[in-house]
Amino acid sequence: MEANQHFGGDWTIEKLERVKKYLQAYTTIMSKQVFKFAYIDAFAGTGYVEFSKEEDQGPRLIELAEEEPQRFIHGSARIALQVRPRFQKYIFIEKSNKRCHELYKLKDDFPELSSDIEIINGEANSIIQKICKEVNWRTNRALLFLDPYGMQVKWETLRAIAETRAIDLWVLFPLGVAINRMLKKDGQINDIWLTKLDDIFGTREWYNAFYKTKPTLFDNLEQTEKVAKIDDIGRYFITRLKTIFAGVAENPLPLYNSRNSFC
Image (cartoon, rainbow, N blue to C red):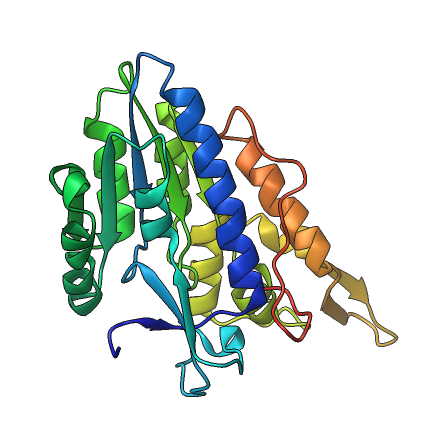
């Protein structure tokens, strides 16, 4: 099935199991409230995660590839549609035209929910910000799942979500697969990567948190070196989230691939 996403491993199974349990708990609680409540998946893909032996996964996903027998598990979109009590509305956002076309098959697979499924073909940041601005959050609530393929989520989007004070957010932070790799040991980071890191942290202050400049044995010369470990980077992101969200999980779930590396 060519349109499916080719990535994943044991960590993906663990992640989706956690998501399923949380969604079930969320709908159970919200079904007893007066609010209308929706599920929003900002990087919905095709609704499936496919496990494949193929190695040509592209630069963004290469660390996520696993050599396992080919098999499928339900992705976050399908999990949300299967949860009971059900959500009152489902919004699936996908930038890829091809993957978005595949998502429309969910309406056929879940005909009883078809009229409540909205599929949006577009860039996630702009669409989420638009939803945050236009929805009446006094009478609505939502659970938003942000599981990007890389570093697409911008800080301004997280801020917009926080300002609603009505959206429960699950976000996958690409700590090992992207962030840590971009933080060069000598601090010499190109402008493109600097901008991407600024976008995800919402500030340039991360540089002073992760790097220190020390004098060398030579007069008037200094050396910059990375002092932040991978745990320090994760804690820094949590600290940043606390500046905009009323509540943030203190001990988020770390996800690993089969080589025991952070995802």
